[in-house]
Picture 1 (cartoon, one colour):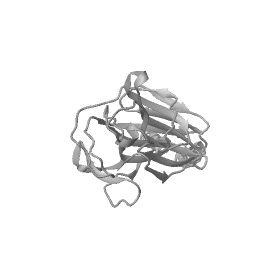
Picture 2: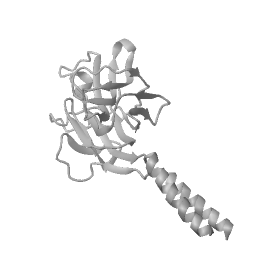
Picture 3: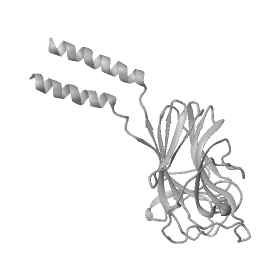
Picture 4: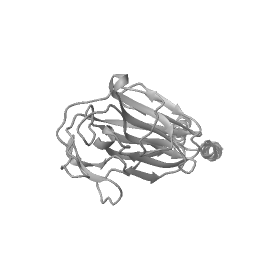
Length: 249
């Protein structure tokens, strides 16, 4: 009986100290009336994703410490401006979290910097701009992940035809104690931004002007997993211990 009680106690303790299950915020399978156009996933025609052109952005309200994940499709080495040339120094799609009433963002971006020898880079930054032509990433990551896919878009202004040359990756942003740590599922790179303050939003953008901004970006499966406050865990443990003591009597 005593050993069985200990097993129950261990199970409850694990439940109390585990993270809350991740919640899906948006997967673009239902009605959508905000910026951008919902299009078929280039890897899976039965799934939808949100296509944003340069200058378009979406902001979703969210508060509390936790982990945000965003699936981002990288169009790869395809980068053209309106004239069909590649000027080579542009910041493309961006995604991140806002803090301090959205005055500050910790974010990642796809960048094209020819002087870095790069269609190869990702950047991370603490930045206020979501769609401006200036972004200033503080870290150049890579490589870009490409896998040669089909043409995306109908040729309209909202859905320009973009030769597929990209791949999905999942980006994770952990917000805890005013700091945001950004990682992705295909590399060992991570970057931590301080002074974020409390989380106020999750956002993603087609980027600013220039070649990559003209290509736009695809986004899908926005989730948020709360990180329980230590005080909440302590209270839960105290209530459990009190109940366990009564059982032993």
